[in-house]
Length: 350
Image (cartoon, rainbow, N blue to C red; front, side, top):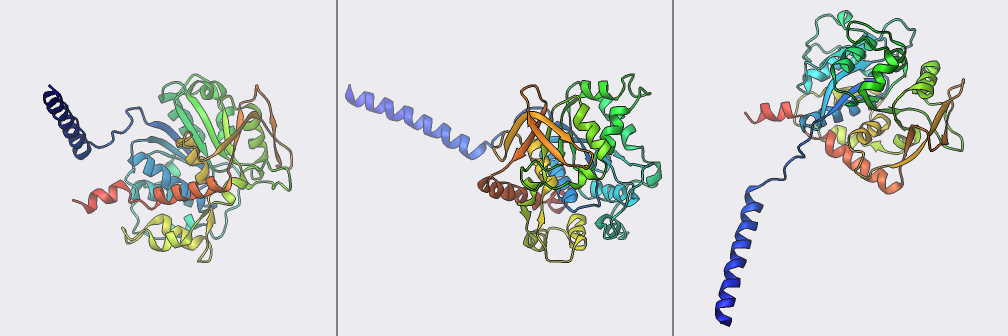
């Protein structure tokens, strides 16, 4: 009896081990079966190189099926901004992502614009023949939102608030009978912004806010969905290493983000990752990379200073990080950005 019991137990153990080994050898962890996040990326491409690194992350998330980049809107008047975005769309294998441009406002454009210098290379593939024919950013925003399901769109804004304010003030049109505020309220799930500085001591008047103060005031005063802000001090201390730029992109002869990085400032330099932090939290909010402060309300003064006041009824939040999180975030940036784009990997392995 004891022998039979032992034999039976051994037989059962073998079955369990066999099933375990079979599963371990043949099965891969399945991706979570859920719809990708619908993302609109509103940016000032050409100002600081962090915009280019941030959009690289979005393309990689799209490669993984985590996001669907439904549109990209520029809030810079400089035509090089949208042409550089066209080059990026093609390089990463997403030539059909629509792009919106901004006109009708006075803006300065930095003479060392990496976008302006990078588009001078005619060998980069483009898919837009006439950049003047691109829709206004506000029109594209309305078109994109109108076509999506309710409360499904995440907007990541890493530049000035000009396009967002124009969307708020927009009127009913052929895309939607709703005016801007109602369209946002109906379609947008969350707005993620890189803006401001909420430090108690010596806060700066942050560039994205100061460049269009009335627009920033309009957004923070009246935007009808939750807003999470990554302020200046979060990305300031998380530096993207120049050693990565020099060594981690051997999979291609010429990379439009790497080449842009090299001409943005005198090499070698490490660069803060302001805009990347907004992208990371927007797409991976539950990964523990950030502390989230709020709810509350952000106020923008007439000189561009930003303040945060706790308020249980508020809809504003902001991000904070400690030293350990900074290291984890930096490593995550490197993990994502240094990966081959799927289109290059596919072509290489054919």
